[in-house]
Amino acid sequence: MTQRFSILKQPIFSTLNQHLIDHPTPSNLSHWWGFGPLAGIRPAIQIVTGVFPAMHYTPHVDPAFNSVEHIMRDVEGGWLLRYMHANGASMFSIVVYPHIFRGLYHASYDSPREFVWCLGVVISPFMIVTASIGHALPWGQMSFWGATVITSLASAIPVVGDTIVTRPWGGFPVDNATSNRFSSLHYSLPLILVGASPLHPAALHQYGSNNPLGVHSKMDKIAFYPYFYVKDLVGWVAFAIFFSIWIFCAPNVLGHPDNYIPANPMATPPHIVPEWYFLPIYAILRSIPDKLGGVAAIALVFLSLLALPFMKSSYVRSSSFRPIYQKLFWFFLADCLLLGWIGCEPVEAPYVTIGQISSVAFFLFFALTPILGRVGKRMTDYYTNHLQFEGIDR
Image 1 (tube, rainbow, N blue to C red):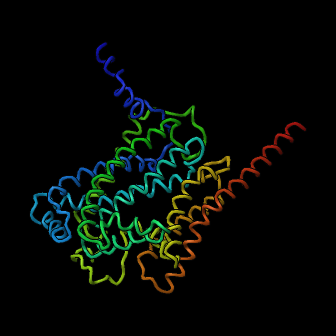
Image 2: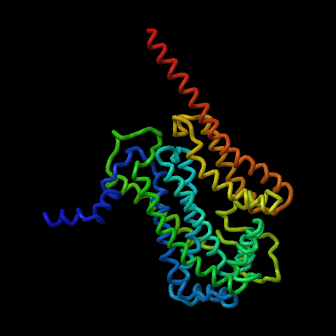
Image 3: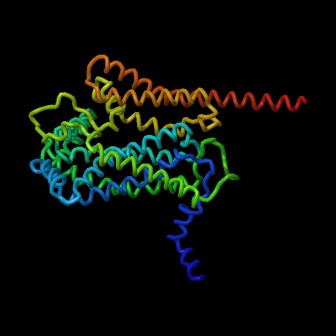
């Protein structure tokens, strides 16, 4: 018995116990907080389902498309691993987006969790780049032209733009060197994700999770195990069922039909679109006629998210007690869905005009958030002082 407890006192076991078993957690966390652990296990699943198909993939422009078909048709279980990996990128986004919007709704970026939020925002570009590169590997028609368009955006950067473009291309055209570079990057970037992902919950556990009420709950916390372990496990099982439905019943719905055609550099698709989870950002990009302005707008999206913790000035965190901000949040969510729809439509009227208006509304949310916070703070100070003054008079 004594020996067993001495083993549990070893650093690795004490760390696991601190973060996964005895970690004090607010008792009122809902299932919306379960998307965080789900987002944490998704990179590991992507790596496992990507390693084995990679053994049969050929990173060359000529046999790349046929090697993917070989995985699907000839390799035992290859179709399952490939569908799990390809649809897994979409499932990753389905998990991450609610996680981000939950943080916006409940102001999880507020003090003292600024570093947690900023670390998550910094991780997101690696996720986006990894998914974009992976989308190019099958070397289908949409893979080829999507990679060509996205990488050529860097040419808008003054002075160094052309150099940045030719580095991933490996030359001046998108060719075999590009396929080799994309293949190597797609294998190496997930290692950065896996290495950085544990830092996010570790930073979160330093101060504890936020909660739906947005108030300090130091006196109302329970151990993570077994209550939240079982609660998260229910969410994982439900997500596994949802994931399985896509894999076995509709594995190709989330992909573009043109990507099942071998890449042809001489035939441009009538409408080049990225994967569905990039459509809102793509709609903002194409709403600006100038290429450099579009690239700057994409950078501004992430800079706005990074700046949120430093612009927040309200005493109240949760939107449940901020009706004006709550309406602004739902308007912002609807605007993001609208941008996603605009991103898959042709670049013509009236979609261009709607996209420009929606892009302005998108950034307006980040401009109004600190203003509403200051107004709410002044109102809170006024009523607090007023009640104190009345109490003194009485």
